Length: 385
Image (cartoon, rainbow, N blue to C red; front, side, top):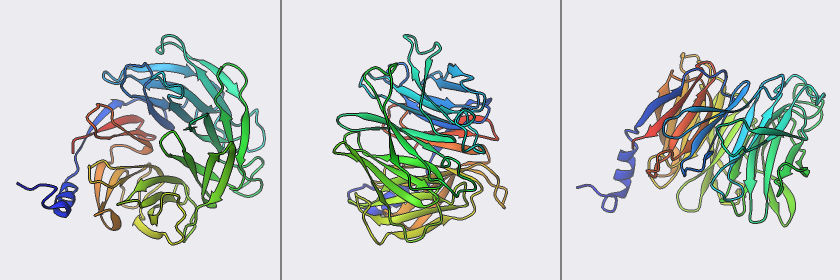
């Protein structure tokens, strides 16, 4: 009988040869599906699925996947992003959302951008109370970041104020400190102002000392809260094509890689290998995994197959020259993408707007959760590997 101990290389690579994910469509009637978040909404110990849709913020209860409305019609324009995380350790997520999506208006805060914290009711299936926070125009992405002493909501606009065609003022990245009483006033800090267009961010760490990777026109910035101050540095990349999506992954040993979609809404899935834990390598190797995306818009990086190193999942939302769209998995050979294989997870069944990874059934394996823009659906891909 073949075992991992006797034949580690063959076992790992053979295991990756036939990845298996079983699709379940839990909603076939969404409007756009701008953003997904994963977390326990009702405190039952199981992660639920949250969605920022065009006019509604909703959650789907783990198990029966019943859809519950959180809030709707927050602003005249669309909702655009959502962040959900348990900040106070009570087993239930805190939720913030971004709205008034109007990327063509970069100057007027009354017509573009909005940030809300949603105050939880006793029964989470009832309407939540929105508390509006300070905002910049073109609010686009947000994530919660934690460390030992505080939690922050990081909000990233698409453009700088008054910015036109990616030129002009830089994007104001803002950190809102989570207060003891969320219904009271929130303090906020400008933490970076170095990019002229941004698209997404990744949060790296374990809740004790997390940092942010921000992708945009000028490449990738590392932003970290340490010693009570925000510190920034540019992440060296051998080529800067502009970065739309980004996720940090783990290779073998202590090494890491950075997966990117380039440029924003781009055609190319690239990976930068040979990064150390602090991303201070001055010689990362750039490898192109796929160059035929069309409106590449989502990434997930994790060890879905149990190989001991991470794989990359990419989603795009428009048919490419071959008429293909959907979700694909890229598996490195022995921890390096110098040699890799690619597999369809969903070919043509979802015009992928956003992707998340989470263990939804508690079996220790990560599922994929995707929202589809033109296909107007949400799917869970159950991990059967």
